[in-house]
Every structure is written in structure tokens, then in C-alpha cells.
Image (cartoon, rainbow, N blue to C red):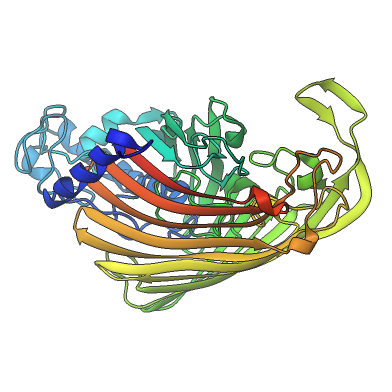
Length: 517
């Protein structure tokens, strides 16, 4: 009687309320945007499904590692002198008084690993345990590994693209059952935070973050996918970074179970190679400005593999910039209000039909005469309170499909003209308990229909480019412990194509559980 979702969906819906009421040990979700390169002011257990939360967590680890380097050195000196004792070991990080780890007793007991005071789990390790989990290299370099094992189940009443993540719905096929589901662990991750010896006021470091979505996640392959990989030098006033980073254009993301974070349906920005500069200006205790700029890779094929829709670079990098201001007294969750405006400009060149084919996956597409200007502007807003808040973005863009503008469509494949689109997303969150958060949001991407065409106009089965894509979602996220999360999301999606009969609507149920280490 329940249809395709059947007993699995019913069981989740019945069990989740009782789990929420159980009020597990304290944990928090991170609803504050962490500007790339800014060390976190207070740790909040992040929402693991967010890619930018990976960066925020690893950035926090870097800051903690720098503090620990000095502490461990001082502790070693005391130990060699015979003066070290458990009572003299300073507790570091934000200690969870109720948590236990590795079967250890709660606060006040001895850590079964190091014999010192109890830890609360990565990344809240005491200095001795963190020292054991770190790889210390010659010259003062330290590498701290972390990661997660994440299992997901997705049921959809309509076909979606694709498998492990959801970008949009496939075209409707009348008379055919469209129910689909996926069970996978591709959003599991293995990450590394790197810190080096200080050079005056400058601190070197870097981040490597990977998952198992493969190099082209929408093609439903498995394999290691490098999400972030960059090195940096930073001080209290400047930050320089070089490598693969999250985009500066459209910098914040909603809290969703969907690993793609509603990109293609209102959320924009992903990751690419770039040279990045930040300048921090603290005007007063209640105001801080961040001015950022970068040169970024123009042509990335991670999510859009059709050259006639994506285009190629015209010999110039994209220029991205953002100016943002944080207002209010600094709190454990960040400053209460933040507003920023970001933009991108560049050039995209159309391509001709390929004339050199090395193998099915290695084809050379020569450039065409048509050159289009990539442009985009995005306004982002965040309002944070201890128990509730809101965030969102509104944007306009053209020829910017690699940033997920116009649902990944930069060009009309028939005319090689730029595709223009407007969109955005908004989200409200509420903390039901210290460890349980619920989020409600909506996102929309609405390309200009007159800019769209057909990839192959001679194919009678072609439905044309996507002309509209939106999503509404509700979820509940529970930090069961500092190293175990459970999440459930229900969303309603609509995707429209140039061929009106291909329009599709669908309801999705998305469940995930995550072990963090």
C-alpha cells in the first residue's frame, strides 16, 4: 500500500522522531560560512555532506595543530626533566564533557590510548593523542589524516542525474515506471591537513580532500575524486593559496543531505584550480572585512562533459572576486550577520566538430570563431543565532555553466551563443536540541529559454536543453555522537526541457549515516 518506497521509507520516518527525542550527547552543525583561509573562531561539528564544511574542518585542524606544536614541545621538555604529570597537561580544543571515545570513560577518566585525561574524539584530541595520530616529518611539517565512512540510500519517484548525487531529473517517458533508487558509499572521504614551520608571521600549510565519486561524478563511475588540493601561506592579515579550491563565485552552500548541495537547482560554485589572495581588515570588534580575488581555471569538465555545451578556454583565466563584511560581536557560532558580493568574468570559446580521435575518451575539439563573455554576479547573505538562522544567495550569470549556472549550460550547442540564467536559493535552520538540527529550503535555476537549443537537432528523441530546474527540501540532521551522524531528507523537484512533454516532477527520500574519524 506504500508504493515503491515501501517498508524502508516507512521505517525511517517512524524511527527518526524517536531518535530525535532521545537527545544524544551534545554536538553541533556548522551553519556559519567559513571564509576560505580564515581560521575558525570556535569549533562546531560540521555538516559532513557539505564540501565547504570539509574545508572549514580541516582549516580548524590546521589552527589547532599550530597551537599543539608548541604545547607538545613544552610537554616533551617537562617530561625529560621529570616534571610532567596528568595534572599538568593542559586540555586543548573544545572539550565535550559528556562524550566518550575509543570506549574511554567520560570526562575525568583516563584515555585508554595515552593514559592521560580522556579525549572527546577527532578533532578534539588531547595533545598527546593528536601527536600519535599525526605524521611528523623532518623540518617541522605535520600531516593530520581524517575522514568519514558514509552510506546513503536514495529513492526517487522519477529518474535523476545521477546515482550518488542529484542535479536534475531526467525527461519524462510516458507509460514507463520511473521509480529509481541508489545505495552507495561514494561520499566517503579521506582528507589530510598539512602544516609547516612558521616563517615569521606567515604559516604554511595545505589541504587534500578526496571522495570516491570518480573524476566525472555525473557519469556514475567509482574512483578517487580530488575535491581539494592546495597549499597556502597565511597571516593575520593576508592569505595566499594555490591549487584546487572551492569557487569564490557563489561561496556559500545550503545544509542538505544531497552531496551536490542542490547545485544546478539554485546553488552555484564548485571547485577548480586557482591562484587565490585574501586580505583581512578588522575595523572594530563588531566589523571585519574580507577582500578576495583569484585567477581561476576556465574550462573544467568534471560535471559537464559535452564540449559543445561547455565550450573551452580562449587562452585567458577566469577572474573571480568577492568582498564581504561580518557584523556583530564574535560568538561561538561566528558573527551574527554577514553579507558579501562576488563576481566572475572571463571568456569561453565554442568548439568545432572533432577531427582527431585518439580513443573514445580522448578527443581533440578545435576552437571555433565564436567567443562569448563569461559574466556573473552573486549576492550572499547569512544571519546566525544560537538556535536558528537563515542563509541564501541570489545570482545572475551567462556562459558560466562550469559554475553550475543555467544547470551546467554555458552555450547553445546549435548557435554557440551564451546561455543566460537567473536563480538563487534560501534556507532556514532551527536547532531542535543541541545535537539535532532541521533545515527547510528552496532553490531555483531559470535559464532564458530563447538562449537554448538542441545538442543534436536531427535526433527526433532529443528533448533539448534544460529550461527550468528547482527543488524544495526539508531535512533533519542528528549528531548522535561526535563521530556518528544520521540524516534524512525529503525533497520535491521539477525539471523542464525545451520539449514541453519531457517535463518531469519527482519526490526524493534521501537517508545517510556517517562515521567520522
